[in-house]
Amino acid sequence: MSNKSSLIESVSSVFILAYKEDTTILEKTLQEQGFNYQLLRQKHQPEYKSYSPSYLTLLNHKKAWIKASEEQKPSLIIEADFVPVINFGLLPLPFNLKNHNVGIAWLYTCASQIYSVFNDNCAEGFSTSAVAYIITPEAALELIELANEVRLNFGSDNYSTWDSTIDEFLRKRNFQNFVPFKNYGEHGGLPNLEHSRFGLSKVHRADVLYDKLAFLPIYAGVDQFQIWRLFKERFQARLKGILRLLIGKYLRLKVVKSSSFPLRLISFAILRQLSLRI
Image (cartoon, rainbow, N blue to C red; front, side, top):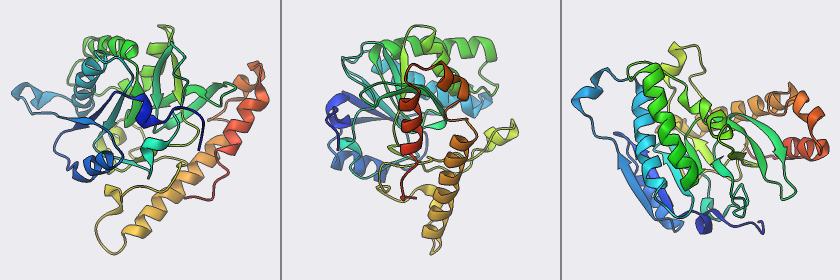
């Protein structure tokens, strides 16, 4: 494994964000791995009738940010359709606990990029999607303000890609944000129709995983073809990840040229894809 601190050792609280989803298997998996968690299940309010799904999701994350800002250690926030890999809690933390400028560390990434790689193999970078991430108390306090800004600038009824603004928002406030060497789990949910209505991909999956999934995701279905669907989705995700590497979206050429340690960046980007695991 690694001499870094493990996930289970490093987070104080785990918050599961849900609406009507069945979280039984996810909760059981977290319990088996030793995590203490709180289930934050959003209750429908009359005023929510006109709210966009993206804003309702933001409200649930804001609830978790308020709680995370009151903790002494980083908190883990995961959405109900996150599927962790086996031995999830034993995986190494994707940042150094001695770094006091940490904002957010994504455990599941989407459209990710890397900016720099430190000598302990921790990578500063970008991701959109808030399916699974670690947040420090200081950064959580700042993100509460992000939620307020989204309501002011976009309103509660309109779609916004608020999760893609987290990195820039925190970096402007002198935080460093991190992406993992490999994903700690998968977005197991069904296609997001709201994304597709606004020209975005309605499906996003992890490009490369640390290990096999702890349980079957929702998208695999419940019939005799579930293993085939899982293989198909995972295979396509791997291909997309490799393609993003080859065309310079995961590691941009200008980032390499401006880096003091370009070989470290290149090695990180390539080695993570050298896995036979689908």
